[in-house]
Image 1 (cartoon, helix red, strand yellow):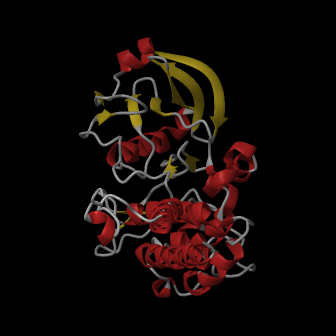
Image 2 (tube, one colour; image 1 turned 180 degrees about the vertical axis):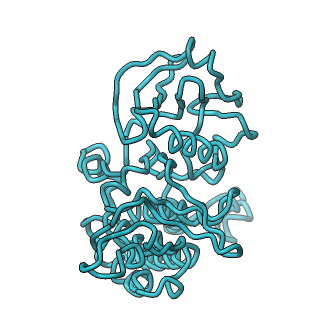
Length: 350
C-alpha cells in the first residue's frame, strides 16, 4: 500500500488557508482602506501640505512651472503680456484677463491718478506678503501703473454659492469643505495680524459683499487675499491705531468702535472719530464664516459648535474678543471632533 504523506495526517500544508480566514483578511483590508479614504476625505484633500509656489523673494512659480522665474519687468510686461478682456473693476484698479506665455494671468491697471497712493500701497503689500495666503505676484511696472498676478478663473469669494451649485462641484459642497474654507479665511486674518510687515488690518471690509470681493477662490478650493490696497498698520507698542476711511460708517457688519460715537445730534467729523485696532477684523469673522458655511446638510451643526467662539467675537469690548489664532484653534477642534464622529458612524455601518 502506498504511504500517505506525513502532512496529510497533521492537517493543512503551510501554504493552504481556509476560505473563511481568507475572507476575513480581505474584509479587514477593505475596512482599513475605507478608513484611510474617509480620513483623507474629511481632512480636505484639495490642500497640499507644501506650498508649490514657494520661491525666493522676487520670484514666482504658477501652474505647471518647474522653476521659479523673476518678477516680470516693465519691458517684459509690455512685450510678453497680451491683454484679452476686462473681468473686474474697483475704485483703484481695472482687472483684465490676459495671457503670458500661453498662461492665463490677471493684469491690473490703475483707474485714476487720484488713486495712485492706494495702488502703490497695494503693490507694496503684495510684494511684502507673498506666500500661501496671498495671490501670487508675477510682475509690476510702476511707470505704467500695472500689476500682474496669477489668474484664478473661479473669481472672487462672492461667487462661492453660484460655483458650488454647479453639478461638477457637488462633491465639495459639504460642511467639511465649507468649514475648511472658513479656516482658510481665518488663517489669512491671522497672517495679516502677524505679517512680516507688522499687524495689518483689512480695511476694505465695511459690508459682506465688499469683504468677499477682496478674496479669490482658487481652483483647488482654497482662499487667497487679492486686494491689499487698504491694509493700514497697527502698532500697539507705539500707540499707532487705524481708521478705515474718512467717512461715517453704518450697520451691524462693522465693529461697534467703527461707528460714530457721539450721536445723531453731532455731525460726523473725521478728526473727532476715534481710531481702533485689528480686533475689528475679529468682529466680522462670524458673519463671513456663516456665509462660507452656507445651508448644506450639517452646516447648522457646525454653527452650533462654533456658537461660543462666535459670541466672543461679537464682544462690545474689543480687548475681550479672541485672537485669530484662538478662533482657528476652535475651528480645527470642531472639524476634528465632527469628522471623528462621522467616521465612527461610518465604521459602525460596515
